[in-house]
Amino acid sequence: MSVKDLKDQSFKVRIDDVSFDVPVLYGYNAYDRRSKRWPTPTLAERSGLRRSVDTLQFEALLPDMEPFSEANASYFAEPGHGRKIRVSLMRKQGDWTYFFNNAFHRLRRNDDGLVLNGLRRYEDWSTTNRITKIVYLNHDRPGNDLIEVRCDLEGAVVSPGCTVTAPYGEQFEVSYFFGLRYLSEWPEIHQRLLTLLDRFSMSAKDTNTK
Image (cartoon, rainbow, N blue to C red; front, side, top):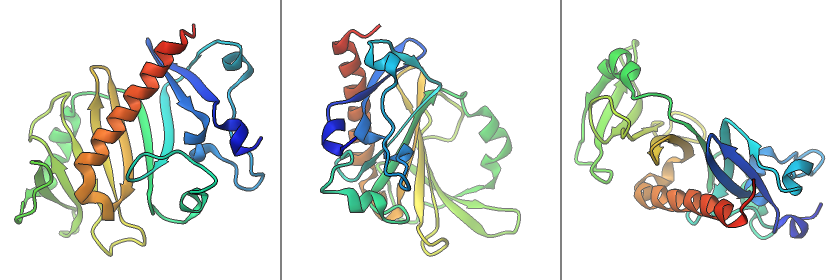
């Protein structure tokens, strides 16, 4: 099926009691490059039924959350992070108590004049007494509102990146990762992602799919 044919198709899914319509062209993470085949909605979805899932995953291009198109195909295909952002949405996994009880002691506060939208900057020291990651947190205690931005060190890996874990609404947690070079744009990226998730949810309400 061609990209043009897929443009108006969406996966119709539900996590618990919340529904989402996700355009197929956000599904590059499931694209089979060898056979050049895209995932497509199931027969049940095309018949108007909504599929229950535990996790919603999709991929887009920064900075504007673009889905796949023939014009931007090369950016999706390039190795490493590039312009890609990969997203997972799931039920909240807890209030971070385990993290603060077992891993927070490795973090050493070092803002070093660098501010990321007001988040606190920490260096993550491993048992080998070296910095392994840079971590940004919005506060230093367990809670359902915690935001964590965890980044590779520049030059530590071939394609350094950042992984963000943050709440979405009352019942969900969104996790996503992108290239380190976009870190300074994180506040805008985060807001655009939340807006996109809202759009998926509103689209599902509009379709009235059962």
